[in-house]
Image (cartoon, rainbow, N blue to C red; front, side, top):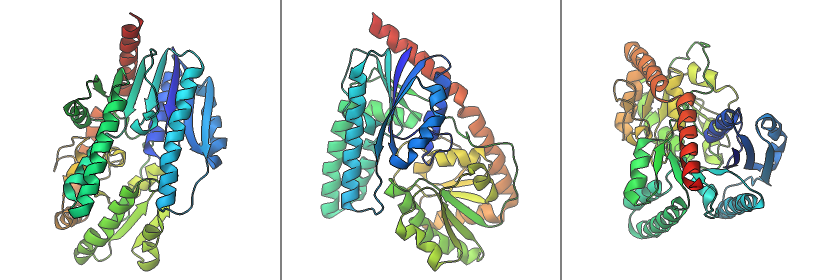
Length: 389
């Protein structure tokens, strides 16, 4: 088939965005059986990276943009307009020639995409209504009113987007049920996320009492808020019991308030983008993911488990994964219990070893690239056959 593939983030084997890594593997797999025409959004300095995609794509249509150094209201507005511009650009590409199928990655990329006679599939990496609903229920006063207005706007927008597609993939069963409860009326299918793509058989000596949080910060303020929450609310409680504990907040594009922590506290490191994720996960004692809002599946949690690193996260952090608490993962939803769980892992080698083994096995059984590709091909055949009747 001739497929137009639309990706909001640049697919790359070494990507700052977990979804970009995932899309790269999907495109590489699809290219063995289909003709791929890629429309992707990317930063101007990423244009040379398109070369790694050319072996898998018949044509590439980049939508390049310049980055803004500082985060403020202007940069957020510019980002929103950039998303809309990219979506409109992708829609024009879809009209430019005949395709057998159109596949869009991320709900945000589909805002301006029109419904067509061509079969259309969407991967909802995040159900964008879900975090909007949680912000609405947690706010107070004027903030609650504003969040309520935002919730109804986002919900209406997402419902309209979903109804344009013949098939929708979610990355977890939780998100699939959430979409169905919204009344989208679409056929939603779970796409098993291929976790641990950067994890190898290499082994590394773990650094004692070292805690890692890793995320892409540049366009997701909630990731920075999670790291800051851990440092201010949880880390002090951990250090009361383990004074030499260290905290690493790694990942692409840390904001100034997060980077400043390492200037004030020698127990904190904010290294920025990590090239070798395999080593990064395996060098630390525990991965702490205090997810406060939640969206889609938390890839960093899955990758940590795949690397055999014990994970402490919140209910939101595990909701799209479904790992068994106390067997595969530890769950805690307030600062005191979160700190206690981290201390347990750092202090109890038997617990740490059990979580390491069970977490790795859980990911191996439930999140593979092979399962994702099989599901994708089956759905493609189904919607193309349906539309051809």
